[in-house]
Length: 263
Image (cartoon, rainbow, N blue to C red; front, top):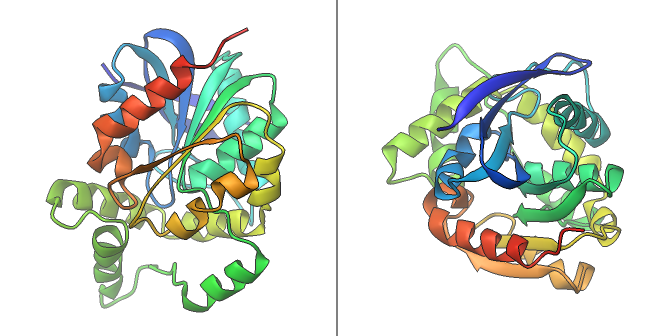
């Protein structure tokens, strides 16, 4: 059974989903503009394990940050949730923005993170970020004509990959509508992060996955150049792999963490 609860942080409450099971805890961190809902299918597939999926501040049912938080601020809030839960050693699993947060948390808590798994990390350099900004549109703020609803429906369907799965597209649309402002905040935070050099500094075992039709696939191909000892796998499901390629991703993840010797 997947349960829900809240953890107190210095800036507000964070909502999380969890299951009680065996083994070291697994902490899931979602993409923008989704929520911890995107990991429910994975949690069911990994039934019997000890898992936590946290709503990043500004998303799902967690508190809304004020101002322009940095990646370090988001990481600190998530670490406060981890401390609230009294988790000592654990595996981190991040998707897109969640990958950026998971990497930062691993840098700050290297003795606590036993492994880092990521789907679609944003391994873009400065020049690539400049080019991406030219065509990037993350504005779906409410407007009087309701045009923003079509914008979000296109985002979750054509861009994220939910087209053809009405229930999934509806779920992702509701999450995106809730996060119309906080998505700007999180995008600014990951844009300012030097994820490439941060990833180079990680010492724990790393698993990186990505789908060929994921928007992050061009950066995924850099993974071995950045960190040659990382494990890489291609998956399916565009930007929604945990829902659309659940069994394969869960099996790759289980195989990965089963090879790690816990000291």
